[in-house]
Length: 121
Image (cartoon, rainbow, N blue to C red; front, side):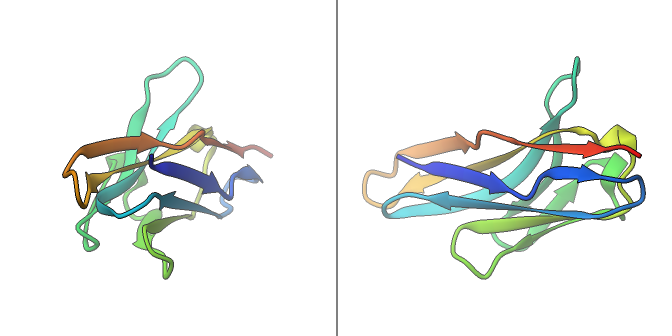
């Protein structure tokens, strides 16, 4: 079973920064990609940023130039550095990890519980 845990949310003023962290744990797994999604009240969950193969990144247009996803030194972990935050970034941020079990080759698509980011003065 794969477990995904996020941390780092909180309250920040407009223009401020936050760093979210996410770690995926499981026995003998290979991660294909990890990413961050967010869901604001009354809206659908949307992609924020994704890291595939450890090097390829893609971002939502709304966060390009402000947010950066990167690998953490820890195995199967990523960070999301968020700068220039504005109230429209307020949402619950979810981390997602997908990959496969090394022996069974069974694929997985796992989600964390989410962490709340509130941008407000």
